[in-house]
Amino acid sequence: MTSYSYNYGFLDEQTKKEIRRKLLQAVAIPGYQVPYGSREMPIARGWGTGGLQITLSIIGKQDTLKVIDQGCDFSVNACNLRNFIAATTGNTVTTDTAEASIVQTRHRIPEEAMREDQILVFQVPYPEILRWVEPSERETRRMHAERDYGKLWVFLYEDIVRWGEITLSYRYPVLVNQRYAMDPSPIPRHDVPKLHQAETLFLFGAGREKRLYAVPPYTEVVPLQFEDYHFTIENFGGQPCRSCGSTSSYLNEVYDGETGERYFSCSDTSHCAKNSRGAIRHE
Amino acid sequence: MSDSTHFDQTAYTQATFRTLLDCMARPGKVGSLLTVAEVASSPFDTYLFVVALTLLDHEVVFHVYSDQCSLSSHLQAHTMARVGAVEECDYLFVGRGESPDFRRLKRGSWQYPDESATIIQLVEELGEVTDGLEQALRLELCGPGIQRSRTVAVRGLSCELLQSWRHCNREFPLGLDWILVDKSGQVCCLPRTVQFTVEVV
Image (cartoon, rainbow over all chains, first blue to last red; front, side):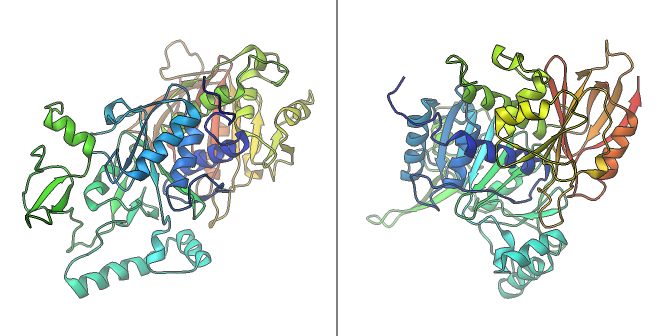
């Protein structure tokens, strides 16, 4: 045992209880944003406090944790959150998606298909998808209550008029269980279809905005699209990842300032490393 | 509780919560609650007490339906939660074989459907198959959390109560979430999104 004097998982039990109650309700009303009393955490709001509070409320001694930031296990945000959770729980951590029972993520869904026994926790900066079109919280509440999503449709339509396509590259609006318009967090469009009829439970936490929401497994999650302008995922022109050669994963474009060369590499570092070793089975 | 140095309530309520979360996310899945000596000595039914310990604190209001053994004060002493009328409670505890009027419970508002009641009800027996369960209701479930359909068998629940629950959930997202617990600690959750057909076996 370590000598720290915090409660297991840093949060006090009352806080965990509140978040747990709200999580059960969030699961029961897929896509609906449940208000909760987001606590002060030892990191700044906007740096993943929502996801962090959810993870600390659900984690138990048997869990193995993975934290990613934009697909990467080793960025500053991911390292600090992972170290913090490990220090206050003593839990095992991993970078392998398949080994983790809880994955906390900032802005990506892992490339490897997640299973029924895993939970994916998202860090969400702006939980309200209607904020694109409506600044008032009271008004967006009313719009959700009445399922009044006209303004959102007009927003997408205007994008098409202006650019000939829907230009949203992240935070692509989805409709959950045919009822609530939901912000899938700033995941790329590449990841949006993974939310639909998934095996895994998805939990979303927005600490600064004091909201949490959920998508249960096997739930319909459909991106908003028009009959003649369909939702599409990113296109990398068939270029493979330079490290592992994958053409199916989400890629980052990298620019080498010295040689002027442009190339692509996988955003999901764990998947990329496994793929390079030949540890990923391709169907 | 606090008089026992060995009882790790933090780990215990966490494990209970994860079972509830898993069952709520996968309606009809039957999970198992664990019991320990510290909760088994409760005058309240052990497994209802386990759920209460996990979910209740001073911020919520609960009601024990037809409370004849002052169980409310026992729960209050252990969780610090407030006792309230059926109409205002966040959590309703229902004993075996009882049929409260669900229509009196709060179902939330259109803007805040989460401000609704959750029912925690004791039944005779729960199972994923109907084998060995006599006079049980077989529920064929579908909805979010369920791949195509899922079957759960419940003994000790009336058709009328199921119909009344369905009636309360007719205007999604308003509704009531239902946690069923049996005497051996099996648990099954029915969130308001669940649709079901019922058959008596």
